[in-house]
Length: 377
Image 1: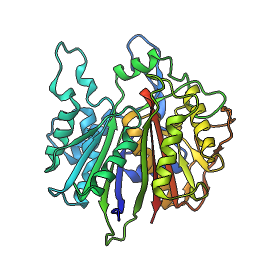
Image 2: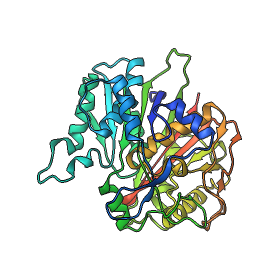
Image 3: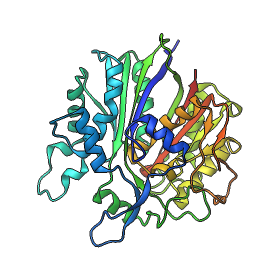
């Protein structure tokens, strides 16, 4: 019999707050981190969700005085610190870091490649600081990285290689990132509107998020979420464009639900990817309908946080679990009128609802897709 794997703790650092509680209260007030920022020289300001650097430094220095770290590393350390203080690290504890770009800001104005820009070096630096005894594992698979990292941790513990795991995910906004999405003409000219007929692109965001996973039944008064199933499928459709038929996402959901042994009628809530690009949202609508999930309440958190790349899947999973704890469905911010060809049950306003089974999905460049099913215990 397979070990049961639980998420028993989590935290996040975002433009809406330096910890989970601040984030949750901001979301209940319908606050968004998306605002106009001047990021590229000699170009118009773009809508993005950015952590206030001055506030970040003040918070970091109050916990980690006289430490020399990059901006992203500071976000990682602040996010992970509370979890480290509550759970022991042993030789059988895994450390998994999810990111798409890592310390890409170190590359600016450099003629050679700085060592800190390597993802493995970033992961080792964070691991060494907190005293992890196992070799860090990096998950970097475009925008499904955060969701995949949960699945990787679950499977590693079930295999017997580890007894527990800390998973952390993060990315920051840089000129490189904004330039890349600008070259795709994918940036919205206003706050993004996932699934809406007037959507015209994404807002980039930045954040760090962290979860703690452990096996078996545990004696605690804290919440527990069982990871029932996970799957990652690559439909290899295009280097950046999603499959028009939603094949990869459909198969990821199907596999995750099959492992979880849950029916369509069991799912209480879907935390979707919902980037607000024309093709992504349409693809998701098709995939959800192929799975006959079109009647399940669904939201995208991109209107609150922007698209946080490698952090998005983990951050949105955390907010989903917090929603389940409070039996509160959050709206898909900025959604007004259906803009996809297939029906979906988009949440338009905050509402009370019993949430036990959560489906979290993600999709990304290169045709990668991922899904996990969580159960509130």
